[in-house]
Image (cartoon, rainbow, N blue to C red; front, side, top):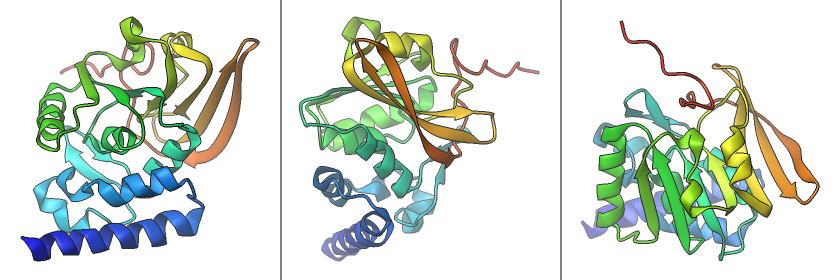
Length: 222
């Protein structure tokens, strides 16, 4: 068991140096979070030996865990101070929420797929991430009762930025979302001030579809 833990600790450090630092991730709090979170526990057992490679991996239910670099880039672009109130749309494997939980005091995360919601809630409890609050719901409607949020991160691609999420973003808040078609998107960063919202294009990306009332509609069952 000790040998296994040392192996994964080495792989995390290698991931941080070769995949993150080498590609411009320089926020020390982000890098430390990646050193701490055991990514191999957030992937399916069949892929545990591939947990730290520079690639997304399937997690079931037609969903994926994003490659480490894109998780790090999106986290860094949120410009977290440590005291932020953060909302994540699309809990998925739970890895992104765990990274955020290492940096900020409280993370709210919403998942629409019930098996993933149950699985990740159990994992958060096991790893003692008591500062992660999970919700089973349509994430495109946000979490109005707990807003406004200093930062919002959406981990699935949408045809547009859901209006409820803009409304729940605090003044001075940052939002990261992939926007585009069902196949490819642009990673968009939104900053909100008293005059409105300001967008920055961070480049091309590819995510699974964001399903919900304010994004892509659920495919009809046949």
